[in-house]
Structures are given as C-alpha cells and as structure tokens.
Amino acid sequence: VLFSAFIDNIPYVLTMLVVVGELAAGLGLSQPYVMYFGLLIGATLGGNLTPIGASANITAIGILRKEGYEVKAGEFMKYGIPFTLAAVITGYLLNWVIWAV
Image (cartoon, rainbow, N blue to C red):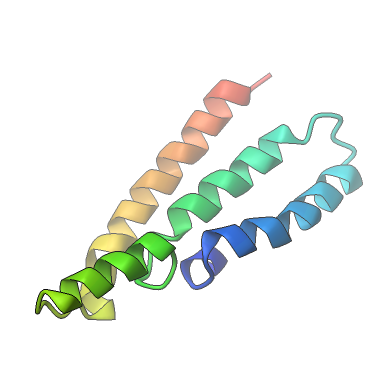
C-alpha cells in the first residue's frame, strides 16, 4: 500500500507481479491467486493515500487547479489516509472471507 501511494498503480502492479509470483512459489503455494488479489487490493487502494498515487488523483487536482482551487498534499491526505485505511482493511477482510479454505 505504501509504495503505491507514491508510484502509479499500473507500473507498480506490473513490477510486483513477478515479485508476488516468486514469493508464492517460494512459499509452495499451489494457487497463488490470493496473493495476487492482495496485490491488486493494496495497489489499487494505496493510490488514494497521496495526490500522486494515482493518475485519477493527478487529473482531478489538475482540473481543480484550472478552476481556481488549490489542493495541498496535507489537505488531500487528511481525507486520503482514513479512507485508505478503511478500504484496505475492508479489502483484506473480504479477501480473507472469500478465499478462506
């Protein structure tokens, strides 16, 4: 989650796919999809933590600036941190409930 807050989701996920695959193989998991879903949840939701974490954030802030509104990083994170924590915990719980064997 923390890395995806500062790196856009797509390059982060593409890079981490190999890492997650190697971790799953090293752990001897026959079905590594749970780890891939964890990566997906963390990377997607982690982008909401900071203004630069997702392309949509950058675009929205650009539109707001064009309209005369200034969005400071601290102000963005005042809303982004609680939302991200709630969303990641919910995603973790759903992942655990859905894929529990």
